[in-house]
Image: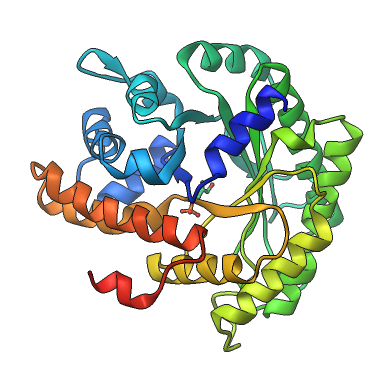
Length: 335
Ligand code: 13P
């Protein structure tokens, strides 16, 4: 087993998943301001540290994705990567520099960050990171995604993945087909399948060790403005069809983004995916909003109650962990 494969498996095995705490300062500012908290470096650390020091880190969280600011912060004598490692989780880092307008297709985006990436990766490795994340985004409409957006984002994801592996870190490959729009689940299935297939074409062309990556896809859902009625069984069926059709067998783990689903929806859907999964891929979570939302809301009103904040986060992480094993049900949410 390669070193990269063992890191990837450690992150996604035994009902563990990923805490995506890699919001850029701009995004974190929006999240904090939405709950009337001023976005200072100190406040951003205070909230995140409450999560990183919680009990469920040991049992439910295999990896934490950090942002550049956070990976360089410390609490007492411990750096944040040391704090995360002390609970048995692996520190990771977002390395893309954001999605920018694609010059040839103005409404779409291309993710940037390849310039100087090798040097930044080496620095992050020294700071303790052992995995990385890069997110490409795709919109669905009558005209989009364009072939250009599908190809250029796949190419960039593969160039990033190659550099991450060269530097000894597992790349999370995240092609996110956004939920915005009035498209139905069949369109989401067709487009997500095409997007993921193109990513693997490029990953294979660029000789990525597929046993040392984690795929972070969206689930297959109707657009947020669609009037299609869909239950979690159908979502799980379509999501599994998409992944079985597009992901090579060597890939050890698939960790879904929550993408705007509620905490309960994302847990219920992940649980159903695991109940129906007959493949060897580990199917787990790499949630940002769906792990943090309730904890952030509580903390915003009770900033000194770290234990109370952690209780809420622990519950959410435990629910997600049960869903990653197909052992969640609605009754458990009430406890
Ligand atoms: P959400 O789960 O909030 O979609 O965030 C996951 C993520 O890392 C997006 O890049």
